[in-house]
Length: 95
Image 1 (cartoon, rainbow, N blue to C red):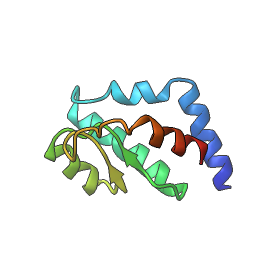
Image 2: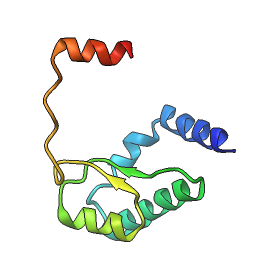
Image 3: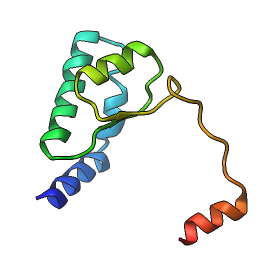
Image 4: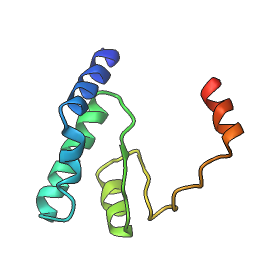
């Protein structure tokens, strides 16, 4: 069941659902919250870990936490890390 759920989510990404998620940011807060809740609930019901990307403000982090989002990442938490040295990157790819 879990493998089928992951495959279904991958198929959604293949038909451009991911860019559609970004299009909701800050346009209509009430609808944004409903949409975020639906995505978080969907992932949770499939027993997946839900990760929000692009969190830039404390309010966003608080809302996601209140909606039950498992994890989040973005500038609010930390700036992107520098790329690893080429030798380390090659070792990670080979592993």
